[in-house]
Length: 153
Image (cartoon, rainbow, N blue to C red):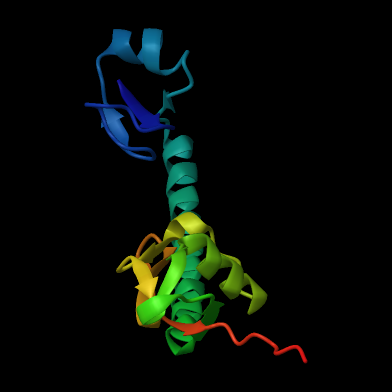
């Protein structure tokens, strides 16, 4: 029996594939659970059209992500922090702080997609890797400077 998989099925195939399975497995398990549907000629044509549309959408998302990555590569984030002796900062700079700074510049990125290359505990210039898309990453420069405090008279 030929079926079109609607979901990834372990040891059978990936979503969208047309696979041949035993009649009982298809009729009693895959189709009732909504994991597959019968592969008729019209269903195969419909699935091919869906795959074509999905591929077009994915390529458009990738192009948009590449443009965002190019813009991010040009950015330099400046974070002002309180420092102690030997330019050591109190605490560390986190990916959350980088995400907030990027959000203030108009980039809406999840903090979990920002990966700091080093632990930031001193002032200086560092880099962070931002995963914009599953296939696209960008490197952002982070400059950590002592916070300038206003003097009171």
